[in-house]
Image (cartoon, rainbow, N blue to C red):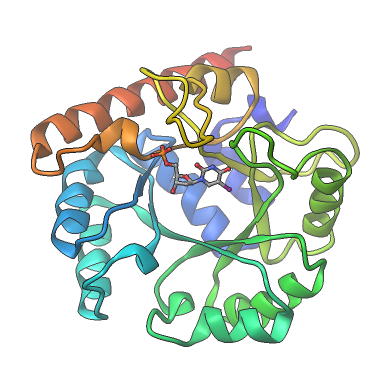
Length: 266
Ligand code: 5IU
């Protein structure tokens, strides 16, 4: 199946330019690590990204968390993306009707579509959410991930909801490049989808607020996912310790990549 193939080889399975670029970046950087930067100050945000940049294929953002956001921050983020050769994924989790999400994606303070190569959406509104986001993102060469599953205890995104989400993606292969989920979809089709997985940690099992962590090996080797998404496991609580943060990023990068190499052999 797809999961035994090298990342670079899979680029040809996509027409979407963001999907191709992510797979090629992963191979070039020898990294399937995405760091999720959930901090409130621009200064910390940029310092963490500069520290982890060498080790990641993708930076995941929540720009609505930043209390001092202004658009010049996006220019700094893009400069770091060039410097370290990573892509950008705004984890916006759109969830409204097509018309509204198209406006949220293109406009407002953040103008996400203008800089975020990848974004994501809940499948709860049905296929119209893909149509709405695609009307903005597809002409710009952007890619969308659908939320098929969540890492939290008691998540309602299971069973038929997850299966219907896979089907929504199959029906829009030009724009939907894969999923946020906890395992590779099985069954019908055998198409190539990217599976990006949050809820990854090497040292703890949870955060006391419903988050559940699995190891890079469980995620990449046992569950066949493609990208590990790590937040607090990399940057902890003291954002000024940039050397320690870089070391943690390297540790997760190595764990993710060795699990991938093992998977390619199996
Ligand atoms: N995130 C999850 N689980 C999910 C989805 C998104 O943790 O199922 I969908 C986000 C939330 C946070 C990051 O931005 O991924 C994980 O951060 P920590 O590694 O710090 O728990």
